Image (cartoon, rainbow over all chains, first blue to last red; front, top):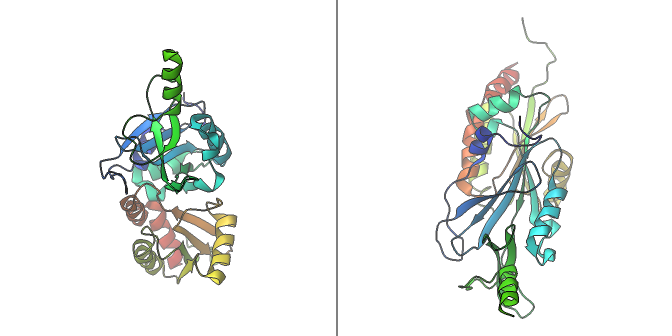
Length: 173
Length: 121
């Protein structure tokens, strides 16, 4: 028994997009990491080894548009939450024929018919108030309960995660 | 059993795109041309950076496609003789080769075989 909206492994595989390197940052290979949440679908964060995020996606097997729930969840993970803007969230519907024969047949056989909805969160490099460039980073350290998204200069070497930083400052008091 | 004489058939293929988007040009223009030829229908390109076409594109995406404030491109639609507009494909935000694979899978799909049958009626 799976949760309603969960995406079976066969469909996850059909939606996979392996490869790619970090664009305009370090040219190193991008790694895809899964993240858990209370939502039934699958989260994937595509980031380089330094933590610069290329794109974050959420996929769910559903007829409804999950964008609003995705936005709320992303805001819980992001410091500050105002980094999550509606214009950076984009919906894509995958019907089946564009996912390969096995996925097409699986989706076609299901009743009532449901597509896969994917919400992408892509934050393009932007300028801070002082004019310096900022990129979106993700911190997966276990020091906090869930991942943390934050913005930092692209040249950031050490981990600049504000939550890790706050905890280490508190511990040092 | 012979097909119903008034069974719906494909009428037009539309690709919503932008010239600067590598998922769109030349990739989706090339595949769009091929798909339109396969189905025996005209291809319509709607460029979101040309004002008159942008309005049509926005309406098509809002009513039948994947609508977001800054929606993904390309988006591909098939219009049918009974007025139905079918959303077929939205580009994959991850990588251009992934969008290419989606087009290739569409060409190999059961859906295309069935739709070619409808187009031939």
